[in-house]
Image (cartoon, rainbow, N blue to C red):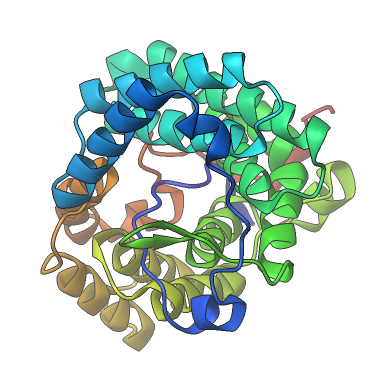
Length: 309
């Protein structure tokens, strides 16, 4: 049996409908602490608004992280500041796609991890902090390699499943909702984690390509089709038949890749997804191990047996 390792969330480039309607965007956002810092609040609002009109630059995202670090330091009890910092760090890290930047990228994701962990120490049930803690851990694991990935896998899965079960939703941007993003993330998770009983026994985690397809379909339903979620749905479908492009499921997957290329690019990760689609079309065998940070290595049952916790 062959498998792949967890890499996790590639982008939050989604928009809401069905699942968002169920939860009615009911997260109780508190921005009062931010408003106490008028200059920083205005600059942050302007940077975020510009990023909604066209993909934010790495410099813009870096500045957003800096602002949220400053305000969070001044307002240590402000829970929403921590997940906002986690989100901004996640987006900044994803904007660096060159392999030579991996060391810097990891440090950025670590900022997101530390911020969301602080949040959960204050409010252990906060779903937005769970969302971005899972995102940060997953991206760090994808950079660190197989052992880190497997060691963190069940924790990441649990964080995102908690979000989907919460009944709470929040619009992160004009094209992104919490519930759609959690389903997108789980779609990645169940494709990239090996489908192995031994792995389940050792690390409490197990992949499932059919779950991956199901969650990606839900993410498209929840947030509407866009470059990244259609691409990842297509990749999961191609992976499910081991890249056999003559299979009807893979044919549907290739259609989703083609559809993804027609969608407008709304953020840096959307650009990365669009740039990578031709790579999968050219070599469908890459589908099971594809992740935006780097191609994930295949893992055999024997490899898993040789791992130690």
